[in-house]
Image (cartoon, rainbow, N blue to C red; front, side, top):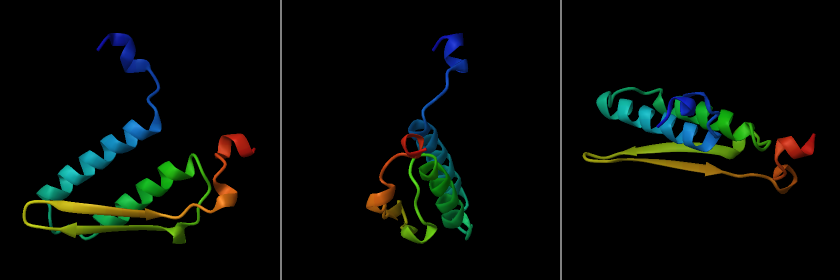
Length: 90
């Protein structure tokens, strides 16, 4: 990694993936935190809203916690009319 890489703009997918990994690592340490799913839902909605227009009712996030592993399930319904990226629509 060079010093110039520090000033490059990162794409949203790796940034979102990194945030999700940090949140999941934090969740593993604090199993009793009830608001994690709602925090994840808001973060995911914000990232998706940068690219396509979706209704909040069409985003469902659930988390199943096991003894050794937690599973995060994300269900997103994108209507055909808003499948065009926001940058191209306007």
